[in-house]
Image 1 (cartoon, rainbow, N blue to C red):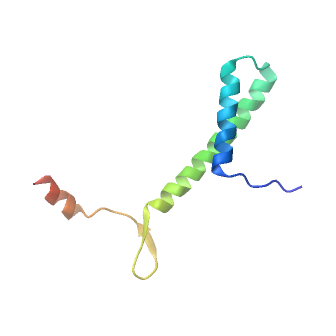
Image 2: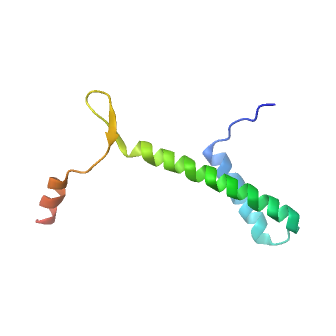
Length: 83
């Protein structure tokens, strides 16, 4: 059976639920360890998704259709500082 790819938001809700369960403190040790491991995996997956989104958002499309890293114009920044 193929597992449906979960969205960022669904994974975030799962992680929040795990954290809430663990914070209550009434989870048996073995179950707490399993939830902690699952939470760590979800956290890593969410972090990777955010890093990929950030990489895409910091790129701009050039006139010829290529992408490059976004950089502010230093001359504009310097002229703003002198005003």
